[in-house]
Image (cartoon, rainbow over all chains, first blue to last red; front, side, top):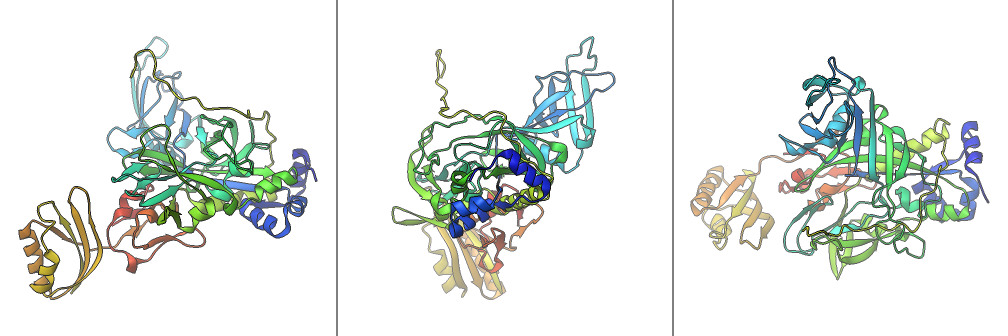
Amino acid sequence: MQRTFDEINARIKAGTAVVITAEEAVELVRKEGAAAAAAKVDVVTTATFGPMCSSGAVLNFGHSDPPIRMESITLNDVEAYGGLAAVDTYIGATAESRSQGLEYGGAHVICDLVAGRPVRLKARGKGTDCYPRQEIETDITLADLNEAYLFNPRNCYQNYAAATNTSGRLLQTYMGALLPGMGNVNFSTAGELSPLLKDPFLRTIGLGTRIFIGGAVGYISWTGTQFNTNTERDENGIPKTPGATLTLIGNLKDMRPEYLAPAVFNGYGTSLNVGVGIPIPVLDEALMTDLGRGNDALFTNIVDYSVQGRKRPVIKRVSYAELRSGTVEINGKTVKTAPITSLLKAREIAQELKTRIASGDFLLQAPIEAFPQGNAVKPLEIKGGGQ
Amino acid sequence: MQTKILMRFGPDTVNHPAVYDLIKKYDLHLNILKASINYNMKGELLMDVDGESDRIADAMKFLESLGIQADFVLKSIRIDEDKCVHCGICTSVCSSRALYLNDTARLCFEQNRCVGCNLCIRACPSRAVSA
């Protein structure tokens, strides 16, 4: 059985495409096998909703009269980048407010804009013949902006490691509070719904793939940073350690607050919960086998965050079914597990994307270019007498 | 009257058998909900307390005279449904399992299991939990 993107899109346009979520695909493959499931189903929707720190938004404010070239910029007292031309900026999710610290950051600014709330813009420039104004202070809303798009350099990590803490002190991390003496295990990846676990070799996910992001239609615009397709893989081809990542783009003006939310991690900082859905076309039975792999057949490592180095030791390899069950056994000790990403929201996204595709208003885009295999991640070595 | 009291001990008071005094001298019925002591010899004790209200008031003064910080835990937590994204991270610090994800992955709160430790308030990245 073979299908092409074009054939699937023709069926979507005709309203005859069969679309199911990744959880439904797991169930179907378990009952009927991959061959029968592949024959029945055209598209499987995957989704995730969780904190993705490497996120932010590009904004264009429009020109005031007289105009200013903004060199230092704050939005609700959060610094935005002032090194672009005139009235463009990039606001990163993890930038923290000068007055409120980590309780309000770039993620909050982005979400305030999406919610339609006014945001205070303050900017300075040196003043030039072409941009004479030196200071500006005003309220802006999302509707006032010329362009506003989310541009996230690293989202959707393929198989992020779970975290625990073997030390005697509480650790406050982007994986949440890690209690001393291996008091808990927190995990991030959405398991059987997670996009990059369901197409592990990125056969259908590449440059230009149309996706759901924050409630809007968006695109994969590049590999993510720290893109790693050189990881060791298990017998099913799933990377054993964090693998591929994606750069995502989408129009902020079409996004909705229920799929984009700020997050604050004590002792760490601000992050942005991003809701992402990626449709995977069932091109053949092999892909359906990948799509049908359940939490019991998907594994990740629990790593020890108390080791403050680049390489953290692996404590145990566990399945997502174990992580989802609420407890895992480590060296005879029962340890509580908790997700830091929302399965409820991921399910809502997978369902909404399924509905949109089935109703014909979301077509699949075949990758314009495939992402490279065998791409390794380089560390930062300290050179030139630095420290 | 019935109430909840959170006692905090420093290194100089951690060896005093304060619970014994509360029972013997003030006739209080105590149910210990949570007890901990860390490597800095600082301890915390959360208890359900049942007794005559004037005896409880006297007991609080007594604890203060010993240098033990004792506070009533008055309210339970509240969850702002508009802010909660049901990630479940709060469940990792909830030792009494008052907070849990149900079979549909929705966050649920069982008030009668809550021991009032309030760890979930700071743990919630959405700032959806308040006292």
